[in-house]
Image (tube, rainbow, N blue to C red; front, side, top):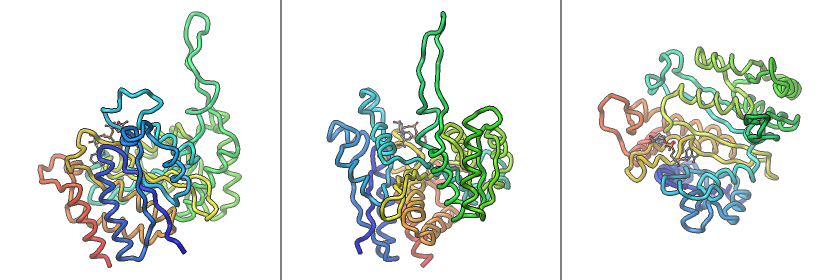
Length: 367
Ligand code: NAD
């Protein structure tokens, strides 16, 4: 049987730097754990524009559609700010998400104990936090029609429409229930059923899907109350499922509970392919960080944790994902810090590749 395929798109700025460390981790799993991938690498974003005049070629798009998983670094940079909207680096990423129909965006908020002091919340509120927000990514108010700015009487009116079909809610709810089944079998759905019809339908459909997952403890919360609870006592949650707009806000807020952008992975999942694996794109939450690009300062952990998510959700290797997360936990506990994790301590930071090396050594130590 052939190895599972992995398409790697390092992108721009710090993307190639952090991805180089991921490549070392992938090689480690091949050499030491017999987990071989057919890895291919291609261009996306500004570098693709430089080479081909487009942020994503049709050929790369086709490769992404066929890959068992896609791993992306980051796109963008000041050099490309002057480009026409249609060829901006971000368009490459948006095209991937749209054409792969990646409707479930998984954003974990996980607090490594060694970094608990980094949070803006008290240590006991965040230490050991491990939750995942599932955000619907391809519908809702960001896409609903009618939209626009129209003239009405003697003033202008801005219009956006929150619109969800039952099937759109159903499929993202299923992703969230499946995730809850792999975790602690606890799911909280958030909407505003008190003031929005789309929220009423959301609650009904999620409840209906929930009947197929009797082991999962399902609860519902209004999204504004959910935001408060996330700040007050986030550990009450395990998996949260919510729509595009609320998910955008709640996942950013939850992410900041854990400290640095350099630590945050994400996954965007779509419908199962013929081999049963979901269409999947894994990427760190951060951007291309032009302010530190090319200086060996970037924290590679968000991108490495994104690969851990790929191991878990695309390749059914949860144990190996945990092995990788534990290696990262150990490295942080041992005091390794890239510059973004140092705060005011005034210690000497490690470089991107030194952090990668430390993680490989911790993986070796865990064998
Ligand atoms: P950014 O995430 O690139 O950087 C924000 C801040 O966080 C910067 O100070 C940066 O140095 C720091 N930072 C980010 N990742 C880090 C890491 N791994 N290690 C250490 N520090 C890190 O966001 P921005 O500055 O708003 O955007 C820069 C460019 O990235 C823009 O062109 C933007 O459009 C693009 N962008 C791309 C993505 C993506 O590819 N998914 C996401 C957000 C922004």
